[in-house]
Image (cartoon, each protein chain N blue to C red):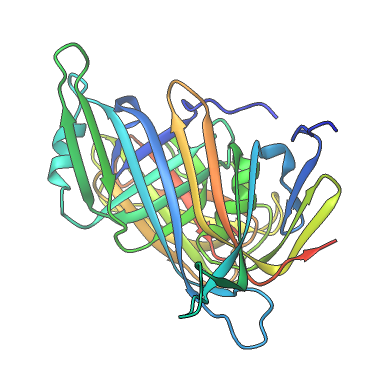
Length: 127
Length: 239
């Protein structure tokens, strides 16, 4: 079994904009809330599954084009469609993705970079 | 895609360009949110609430520079316009602007290194995102080259003018922001900046703002020339 490299195996589309070429890292988090279920007869801590909570952290090298994809929505909270394809598996949040944190940093000795955290509201469709 | 060097950025504070004193600038746009999960939901759901914009700049104490004194004058004092521009080789480069106050001013002086001046601007009265449509010297009345916004807006916006230098004196100098559906078409007035001194100015835009934007100077106010940077923010297009 061979571990897969990221480059070439991950794509990100936001509001129909193909953002992949402007992204150098993707962190898709699907976290299930744990509902405390420990009771007086428990012999160990117990929990039940709550709802899944999803966020997407992305970032890369900045330019006017990628700023045009994410910058305007960062100030409005507009919900868009986000599609993340990882190794052929597609995760889709239709009109449920909005930006909760968008950051651009320019360092005189380096390059200008950007990062964004997207809230993916509700349960995504995995296909 | 070629990475853009960090040096292709600018920091403007009212009439000052502090790019030469600044080693790094960071713009952070945040959005508060609230849980909106309802019964029968299959996943946790949220709603965005309010945005915030913060600009942070880190730099040096530079001989002959006004930055230290100007940042101190604005410490806790509202009413400054601060802009961070990125990818500045592009004609219509993106810019983030806020009307705010200086919220943090840290000076460090290590014995074996340079003195640094690091600061942050408060969230102030909201932030804007626009594109730069002009950056240079105006020495005659008339229109400047137009910049393509990409698409028109229908819900107004706001424009900013940073007047950085005036040769001679200006009394009631006037510069219009105009827009047109096509580059060579008829341009309509969207707003007018009127000024007699250095500083930053804002003018509200209403209704339709077409995709081609330009400055048109109608009066120099007696000045020989002035150096300005103009940024236009159009609702539902740039912000």
